[in-house]
Image (tube, rainbow, N blue to C red):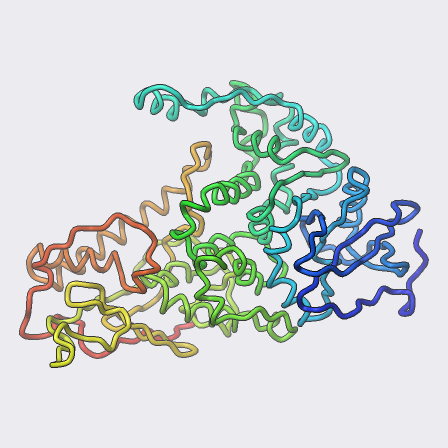
Length: 529
């Protein structure tokens, strides 16, 4: 057992250059874990593995030695390092809580900003799920050895469709019914829903999973998860299934990450920085600011608009006043994103009083609500010929998103607590969208959650169509305006690929006067919702 520490025996970091990073090297596993820390250039060819694990809420009470001095980390991480080094004694490891001086805001900002490069350069990523419990060693051994039959879809289109519709009922039996509760418990481990898992798995060359004393290669682990359904335990529903509120939710969260990684080349231009922030909102983070910083590396190559305006800052003040970062992010989103998309994710279960009502609390889940009687909206439209001058014969050029009479026209200006949107008045802001909506999961057993969303959308579509009909005479005019309301404004270059709606030219016929609701800029003030 390690002797009680004093200030002279504790490890103290030496300053590290901004273009260097640290790696862990094993010295001894017994009687106490003894490691060394060494600096390496960002451009060195040193081989190593990165470790992905859940920080959790544990305090740093686990004792190890680092360069001969005492070093405190969580017991969870101590156990993980011991297991990993038992399997791979000669490997060098990168572990964020050890390799980055957590007491230095400047160093943390520098190292976190390049974490994606560290994971991308690593030989692979070791995932530590935690100690053995709930028969996890048995389950990990079963996952390691189970054979998953090839279910690739073949045949003509009709046959493929039939297979897709029945694939759940044709799922092979992979486990015994008695294994159900243990597998469900494995999927509830916090690692699967960590925020940083997205980046760590996204850039990993390979994954290796450790849990208890077991090791399973990532390809096999993911293959089993991708084929796991309630029918994987036999033709009869396993006992206890109705007791699971979020059945296999952790596994689903991991599959989402791997699906996006697999599709990164074809989808990278369609998914923006904004999209990844929305996805991360449902994930667990110890620091609220990480909901922004964790996305920096992922979109660096194709969407760095936000990085130009937001800087990584882990000072104590920045971490405590994280709403300042959220507000700055919100201002960029309001100007850059199409359809005023930020307003669709505003609703938050919890929110600090300092956060403007038009900005979401990214550290809080969204609550799914319908547009009720307390919610209001108005829509206006620029009149024909708005802003026409001799130097601008096609109309207004003041507003950044105006592309001509028959194109979208939106201008957003912001202050700390106010949004001004030309041609629109926003009352109470309520959420009717789902935060994660990447791909339909054919294995989902939670389709009932779609019903409230569908009902809310239908109500909103119907109400907005009726609104346009009451303000614009003639079916062509009202339909055209309604389509424009649905398509929205924003930077057209950042609009995700969508099915274009045909809009009739009659919707833009010249009028002598401004339509109802159009004229001066209309304002949505902070109502503290």
